[in-house]
Length: 235
Length: 289
Image (cartoon, rainbow over all chains, first blue to last red):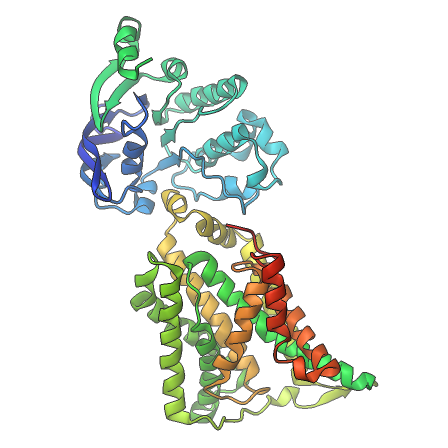
C-alpha cells in the first residue's frame, strides 16, 4: 500500500504575485487515509490545497498525485487523475439548478456513487433538485459541493473547510458522509478549523505555520498531544 | 394610415429584429464567457454575406449549401483570430477587448471595401422561395417568411442548447467560475474557443440569411452593429433570453415608429436605451454584477 502515495508534496513553494505564501511544504497522504491540515488563519492551508489542484498558478517544487508528477499540469489534467475538489467558498453555480450542479463535473473514473446513494446520504438535495443553486442554505450548498464530486468516481478528495459556518446538525451529517467516503476506501485531504470535527474523522493531522508543515500528529497520539496542538492553534 | 402599411412595416421590423436577435445572441455568448465585447461580430456578419456571394459567384455553390458551409467557414476564421489575437487580452480590462475587436472589425471591413467597393452586390433569392403569398391584407414574400421562421428557430435552438443541455451547463458554469470548472477536469480554454466559434458562426449564418434581402455590402456590418449594441445594452449584457426578446421587440418598435413618426425611427432604439439605462442600469434581463 505504501508503494505509491496518493499525494506527495516535496518542498512546495507557492506565490500570490510577489508575495510567497508557501515556503517548502512537505506532506504525504497514503491511499485510504483521511488527513487534516490544521493551523491558524493565514498559515497557508487553503493555498496548499490550491497548489495541489493546480489552481495556484505560481507553484514550485514537486506535487505527485497518484505517483505522477503534476507540477507542470493544468488544473483540468490534475482533476482527471481522479481528484475531486470542494472549495472553501463551495462554488455552487447560481445559474445552474441543483441537479445541473450535481451532474456538472464529468466522470473521471468508474465506481462513483449513484444518484440514489447520494440522495440517501443527503436527502435534502433530492427535495431541492429543481431549485436554483443560489437559493440553497449554507448547509445544503456544502452537501451539494461534496455530493458533486462523489458522483465522479474521484478516489482522492480535497476538501476545504467542509464544516465552516454550519449548524451542528449539518456538521454531523457531513461527518456521516465522511464515514461513508472512508468505507469506500477513498482518500481525503481536508482543511479544517473545527478541531473537534477533525479529530473525529482524521487518521493524521498536519500542523501548518507560516507556509510550512511544522508538526504531524497521528490519531493514536492525539490524546497526549492536545496541549501541544492547542499551543499551535492559539486556542 | 392604412392597415396594410402598418402590417408591412411590422413585418419589416420583425425581419430587422430577427437579425438584431441573432447578432446580439452571439455577442451575449461571447461576452458571458470571454468577457470580450466583440465589435468584430458585425464584420463576421458582413463576412457571412460575402462568403455566400463568393461561393455562388465563383464556385457555383448555391444558397442552401452556403447556409451550412458559410457559418462553418466563418467560425473557422473566427477561431483562428481568437487563438492568435484575441486570446491575449482576456486578462485585461474589457476596454482592451473592445478596442482590439474594433480594430479587427476595421481591418476586415477595409479589406472588403478595397476588394469590392461600397456600391453593393446583389444576391438573388433562392428559387424555392422566390414567390409569395397574398394574405388578403398584405403580400408576404416567401423569403421574408423563411427568414423570420429560420431566425426564430436558430434563436430558440441556441437558447435551448445553452439553458437545457449538458454542454450549455458547462458554458454557464464556466461563465460564473472558470477556475472551478477546470478543477472538475473540464477543458475550459477549449470551451472558450468553441463558444467564440459558435458566436461567430451565428453572425455568419445571419449574413447568409441577410444576403438576398439587403445588398451584400462591406458596410452592412457597421450599419447594424451599432443598433445591435443598443439591443445588447437594453436586454442586459450577457443575457441569452434578453438578447432574443429585446432584438425582436426593438425591431418591431423601429417598424412601428416608421409608421407613426418616421423621423424618429433612427433614434427610437437609442432613446429606449437611455430610458432603460436610467431605470435599470443592468438592462431589462440583466443582473447586477
